[in-house]
Image 1: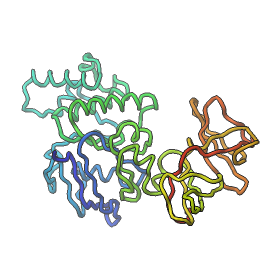
Image 2 (image 1 turned 180 degrees about the horizontal axis):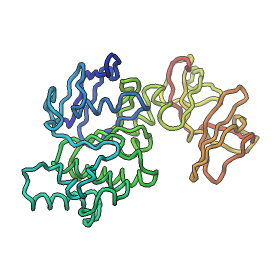
Image 3 (image 1 turned 120 degrees about the horizontal axis):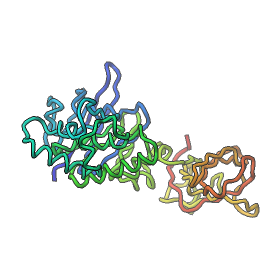
Image 4 (image 1 turned 90 degrees about the horizontal axis):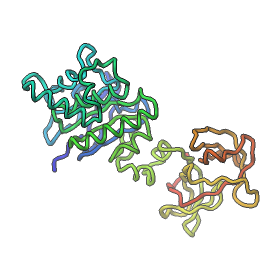
Length: 345
């Protein structure tokens, strides 16, 4: 099957500043999330694929066809900008139908609008309303419906849920992904939200400084990060120095720990996920530390603990069992740790 999108050796920038540094990416289908901090090049990549920016080197294929020199409207893609950008002078139905172009019969346009409203789980009566009468989440779904109207092979989503509150963001995101799957369209989703990328995407491409550090499934990039930068960026993690002994275990400030994969004897950088650090008030076991910071999220909390050698470790605890700042607690590592040969930097 031809890939929905293939990018090879892509380079692009703004003026003399290079932003993308030789990117390679294949999107077979489903949702691929491009995840990275602000300024890493995510939106520049999206704009190159859309045809808004001409790359300085490399190739882009959409559905097996090179799009070099093709105008955005001829690339066969749907595009959803960050704020949705619905036309304020058109009602919802006309906004959606706008994506069909002019050479479509009225009955067909109306049928497609009704179909897309159902697909995006929106009430049929919204077709006659103006964009300002909709909630933020509804506006974003209408923007996706407009992008899907001409049945594109690929849809580009530029941080489409960033302006929504947390609950609405998750609900809207899942509805959009269900619609994309039903429509059979692949999607390239640009986001800086880790939870959004990991929960919605089939493939996650972690980007930093114009390069992909790792491309893989959500499970792979989180549980088996290929670089310390990926490990530190995804979730709450502490990079901890250690020393691998002859038995394949490592000595560290958290005691002797098991390794997820064998490492050669010598210095190692350990990735300690917050959820792997078990916290208790039992003074009889574990490594002792003092709670310095607490971030409460309701269902759970992350705490920052200072160990006796001035090393700081982040741990996740249930929302019903949060120790007070200044409390001495015991820490114990649960499960094997990902490790990288070499000094911790």
